[in-house]
Amino acid sequence: MKVAELKELLDEKVEQFNSPLFLEDDPLGIPHRFSVKQDIEISGFFAAILAWGNRKSIIRNCNRLMHLMDESPYDFICHHSPIELKNFEAFVHRTFNSTDLLFIIEAFKGFYSNNNSLESLFIPNSGDQTVKSGLENFHNACFNLAYAPLRSKKHIATPIKKSACKRLNMYLRWMVRTDEKGVDFGIWKSIKPSQLICPLDVHVLRVANNLGLLHTKKSNWDTAELLTSKLRKFDLNDPVKYDFALFGMGLETKK
Figure 1 (cartoon, one colour):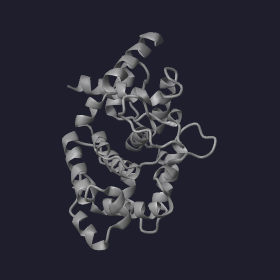
Figure 2 (cartoon, one colour):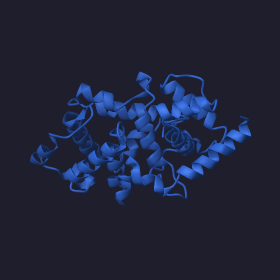
Figure 3 (cartoon, helix red, strand yellow):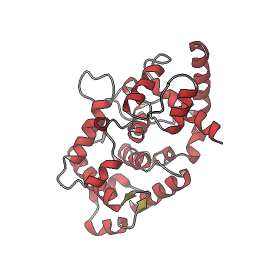
Figure 4 (cartoon, one colour):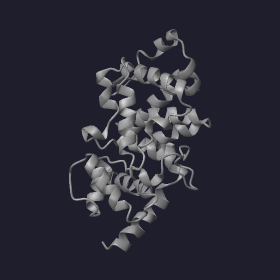
């Protein structure tokens, strides 16, 4: 397929899948229940971190978590009492359990005591062209805490370990990108859409290989960066909008 034809196809698929209808059966629908910035970013973080496995199970457990936080995640994070945390001890989603959850709750409480938004934890180093250093900074902020459990590292990925960081890159897309469709929020302004890295999962990897954008079976940070560099040729300022196309086409061919 010629470059112009491929761009036309991808733009067409972005138009198809970048739609509020997409939210009905997607974890991104969870933060769309809220209007306060901090509620959006907290609920969005958990929706992204829990986003693996059966989609119905993901959404069910995200809804359960928001219910445990009294449908006010920011207020709960900042003002919960120790006894209220007892309700979280039975929470589990696949290998993510109450140890991981209670750690993130406590870490976010500390972060919010010094910051108005989680955004400040993800900002890339000055002059960096991508969010790589921002993801590393967030990981370090979490695991430099004295009480951080080692087991939780598998749930908060980092490029340092060569991970594709699919769920965190997806989260950043939600928080940073903005367009007239209103699917992504665009509430974080210190990170540019051009700095985002495309979320890379098995569906996106398969479609990217089928389209000739990639020629590898490796799902790691280098592949995610390579794919994003290819997508920048179609839109330099907003390459990750094509995540809608690649992921959506992956779902189509999976059916």
